[in-house]
Image (cartoon, rainbow, N blue to C red; front, side, top):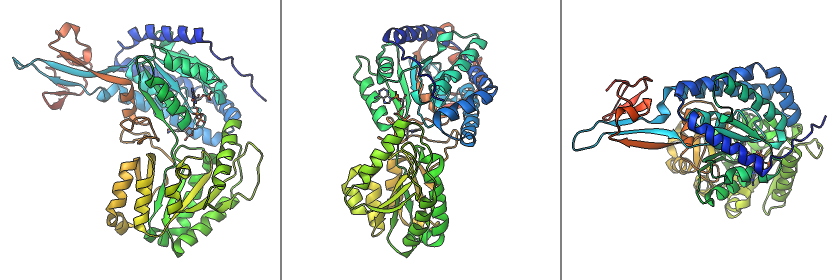
Length: 493
Ligand code: NAP
């Protein structure tokens, strides 16, 4: 049954909400890392109790099946608890203390929160990269109030999650405006948020068009602010000839699965496969084509995304030099996917940058190279990516340093003998990459280091102990790791 849309927040409502968040910031920025960690754990626990309400609601709104959503759900709870632990460690604050050596001054530096953050979630992750997702958790951990702009494609799920976050904020005795939620099916609500002078940063997960337009908007403000936009990517997969010869069938199986799971609606979907011509490649193509033609269409996240998928697919199918290798043999409805695999020669690929762009959904291009040198040229000719995968045997890994160097330059995560889908939430993860994969390649949107996006360093020079924040006081009351005179320790000064 179609759900009633929520009315868009008016400019006056946005203004009032951001003013309240700004006021709440004065109190929230003073909380300790333990208090913020308690809030994240309270949100996780509130969500855990609401699975029976939220999973069917999200499934109804996004058309993602319940097993897929349950995996995302568990990940979201794990994420909140992981961010709580990392927040509490204080590691992200990068505390540095250089004790006075007269005439040299006493210097004490740490990260402090930026201020209220506007968060935009993506339609394909209604839990993990939406209302209570990674950006919200990281901003709250850093000490920033959050205002979420609900994604219209899962507005009811977003409203229900937001109510649970509100309860957790109240249970922790924090000002209610530490977390707010606004609806906006038009871009105007989002724009009003980004342009508001009391918004100090933006977390965005979504399309290149959306992310890049918010980056431009924020840069044009009288006071420009950072936009941490995690955007689409084609996640190239490079198949070395030796590996292809040994495992053509198994590689085809793994890539078919990665290309089509959840209707191919992942930012880490493998949109480009690069390989050298030869018999092994033909065996691989036959196996992969069979799997693509056997894949059933599924209903996409929402009508707009399906429309875009079909329009982009049609546009590319009409491109010069493109060869259709396989299309799902079942034709679905207008809102469904149509899994597709095409091929193009490397020279054509390099001369047409339209072929490098993400087609969000199950659509991949196989780039045929005449030799390994051309494979390196393709790697060097690609734009920034979230990931690059290299399938190579033990000898091949070492024998092509130029390819490895080109890949490292272009991506945030370099994967050996693995598909790009599947992003582990861990401290060593990097989920980001050079433009256009993300707006700032220095930061990650997944893993504890994501908290750093919403904080900035402040150095206190010769400050009396009485005015220093607890993190910098001699007694180290929070028992945090600090770098004191170049040595990491928890010692009291
Ligand atoms: P989207 O259309 O860009 O929407 C994301 C959010 O931004 C929505 O709330 C949308 O509002 C808003 N928005 C978009 N353009 C805007 C503009 N010009 N001004 C103001 N607000 C704007 O993205 P999506 O379709 O939900 O998600 C799919 C895309 O996300 C894919 O490209 C996928 O690769 C990417 N993605 C990336 C990651 C990552 O971690 N890198 C993760 C998941 C998904 P409206 O809906 O009202 O337009």
